[in-house]
Length: 101
Image 1 (cartoon, rainbow, N blue to C red):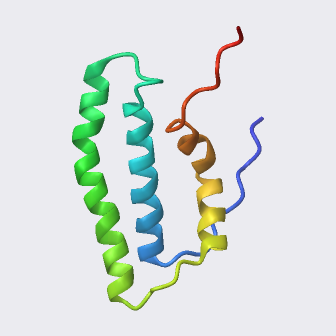
Image 2: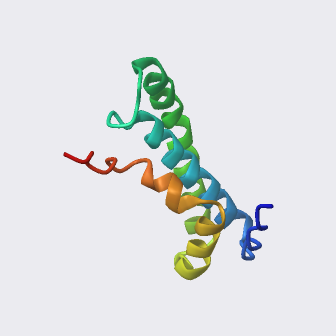
């Protein structure tokens, strides 16, 4: 039985949109990563989708800034990212470990 993840911390709507857009961009970058990809077509599709997701990320940050939310509550956003498996997802952007020699 898989343990239930901890609950998400309380986020403003804009913070939630920021987290969602950020993770969408991270997921796409992981799919584009040439050290992990197996074919060009999936990378191409992810790169095409990246444009709109990056715009969503920009819009979430713009909305927060416009509303006067000029500081990010990093501890809260960090918890949200961890609950949403952000560490593993962001790891797919990095190079995989060297194979044993």
